[in-house]
Amino acid sequence: QTIGGVVGAFDAEAETVAVENCTNTGNITFNFHGVSADELRPHMVIGGVCGLAGAEYVAANSTEAVNNGTISGCTNEGALTFNYEGMIGGGYSIMGGVIGYIEGTVDACNNYGALNLIGGTDSASSFGAPALGGVVAAVVAGDVKGCSNTGVVHMQGKCQGGSDDAAYAGGMRHLCVGGVVGKIGTYNTEVTTYSVSDSKNSGAVSVKTGATPIVHVGGIVGWTSVPVNGS
Image 1: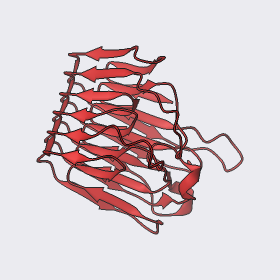
Image 2: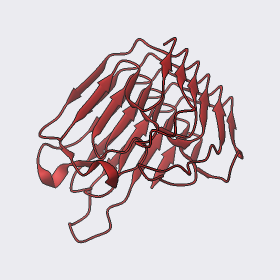
Image 3: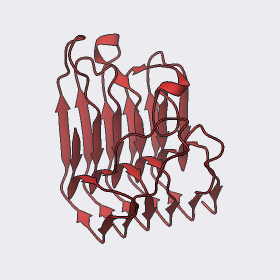
Image 4: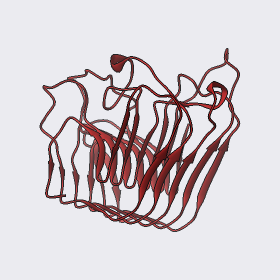
């Protein structure tokens, strides 16, 4: 399931994503009441401007990730809040100030809104593979360049763990929170042609969570397999 202030999901083939000079000023609040353990556990992807851009989720060790285009010059000014109750389990919980998830490049995008990803503290109210980024939560096969965040980035709640090779974008079911980017790249070391560059964050980044395998938190990037330069 995808939510965006301008575009919910841009399902595209190679080099065809193009979201340019769009602005969202409205607040987005999503209250998720969960599913039972034997029901399908959906992926939740939220972005201030665009929820999901590209195809769908790329395997952690993929060498076939394709840059599907660019989101550029976009701005989010609204507050984003994701509240959940009940078990998400196998589904991913992803939220970015401008973009949730992209297989492509993010260029000159800015977020000014506060981000709050809020859940419970027990196994019945736990995140699956959470990623939270001031500008973009998860990036595969693309650069992040010239982006900035000034909004508060906050996540609280228990995270469900899993094996490193069982997840997508960044190769983890671990919690990844960044002032600009939550996670970028894959666990395959052959995919190193992209980078995060000339990006900045002045917003407070905070995480409050229960038991979880690994937590990755950064002022610019939570987790990366690509270089970070001039940021």
